[in-house]
Length: 66
Image 1 (cartoon, helix red, strand yellow):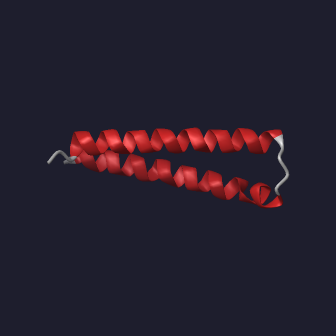
Image 2: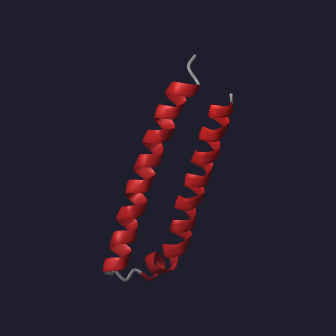
């Protein structure tokens, strides 16, 4: 029970970090200027999102077995 709660909290914090990162780079995305910083930021957020989805799937399989 405690492990599930800690896992959920960590996933929420991670998701919050990803959303904060998206909010942080959004003005650059709206401008449409393709800079090196924007490309690196988008790649970083994409990798983080894919890792988050993988961790979500693994956690669901481990902690919420039917």
